[in-house]
Each structure stands twice: as structure tokens, then as C-alpha cells.
Image (cartoon, rainbow, N blue to C red):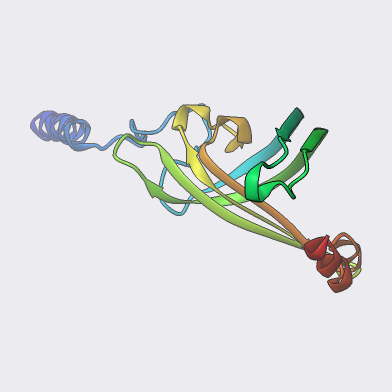
Length: 191
């Protein structure tokens, strides 16, 4: 009986050692245990916080003046019918103009990673349309972002985007009132 007992213990030890040697870890070393999954692959989703503002001021002034004088003496000989002649001309012109423009755009939108470049930068693109009471607003965004600028919540500020193209347009009653009518365009063209 003692012989069977020793054999059973040896068999149990062999199975335990073999099981430990071939066991796979439940832990995936390629992923962090504490960090969320951050969008770094094609098809992943990012949220962009758009905070853009721009302002431009331009001033110009011009002054020009011109004076012309001339005298022609009386004719002699067969040209004695020509009288003495003189002229004086003076022109002056001054103009000034000022242009001021400022714009702000604050929005949040979700975009998709459409390509991962060789340097691991992410090419992103997205469109957002909002329709409220017949007013249609559309925001289109394209650009590139560095992976280190993406937060663990998969958000990025628009100021961190490179080669960014943001288009904001609107149609509807309010947008239509902002456009010039046909007669205004004709008068602007004529005058």
C-alpha cells in the first residue's frame, strides 16, 4: 500500500510541475493594467474640443497730389493768330480704410481615425450636422494629431491638431438673412 501511496504522490508532483510549465498568463503584457484604451488605430474614435479664435486688423491710408503747369508763348509769322496760352492743373487725393474682423468657434465633436501614419501620427476626419428649427449647421474637421496629445479619455484640443481644416457653415432663416440679395450684389458691382 505504501508503494501506491508514493506512486500517487510522485504522479501528483509531475502533473503539478508540468501544469505550471505550460500555463499561459491571464495578463496581456502589451496593455496597461491601469490606463484606458487610447485611440491609436484606424477606425478608432476621438473627441475634439474645438476652441478657435482669430482676429485681424488692417489699416491703410494713401495721399497723393499732383501739380502741372505749362505756358505756350504767342505764335509768330504765319502762326501769329495763336495767342499766348497758359494752364495750371492741380489734383490731390487722399483715402484711408480700416478693416477689423474677429471670429470664435467653440464646439465639441467626435471624429474617426482614418489613417495611422508611419511616424504614428493619427490622421482624423469627421462631420457633425445639427438641425434646429429649420437651421442647419455643419462642422467638418480634418487634421493630424500626435498620439501623446490624446488624453486617456480619448479627447484632444483643436489647438494640438496639425494641418487642421475646420469648416463651419449654416443654412436656414438666420443664415439666409446674412447673405446679400441680388439687387445689392448688382449695385455693389455697378458702384
